[in-house]
Image (cartoon, rainbow, N blue to C red; front, side, top):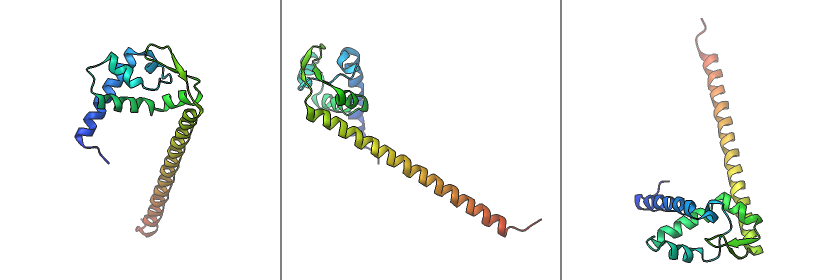
Length: 139
């Protein structure tokens, strides 16, 4: 399934913005748990940024496996400047852990299905080879 060009452009713009944010703010580069409302801090620092693009970039960042792994074990949240912004509550840690479990389970199921399809393809090819050998004229 392919995305419409406008959605693809929005995601590409968000990825470029996220890269810029990661370069400018170590808390993003280091995948530290972000303060609740970090978007308001970013808007204050980068008022020229499109809000929709920033929200997509934040979604990409906070949905990444590296960020979720950080959240799963986190105790504290951080502001853009690296200062403490309170604690990570148990519900957020649990959500991160559950999201990771579901993601890894889905990846394992996909890998298993691909392996089974490859095995079936090989078996089919072997049967065809045997049939061709059986019915081909012998020299």
